[in-house]
Length: 72
Image (tube, rainbow, N blue to C red):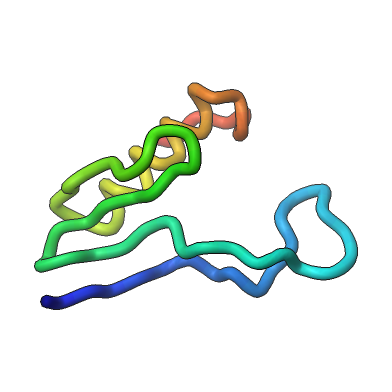
């Protein structure tokens, strides 16, 4: 089983101050397919690339109102 995880977890998010809370990694790869994990609806994927998973995650967050800008 090949698993690769990406996302910096040791940074405050926009607007956060103080200690950095514990976080899970949101984007990961399993057997060369990419997925992202959400609190609300679980796992999304598989996607063919990290870039595609990142784009879909941003779109998902935009739809929920978590981020305001669209991806290109």
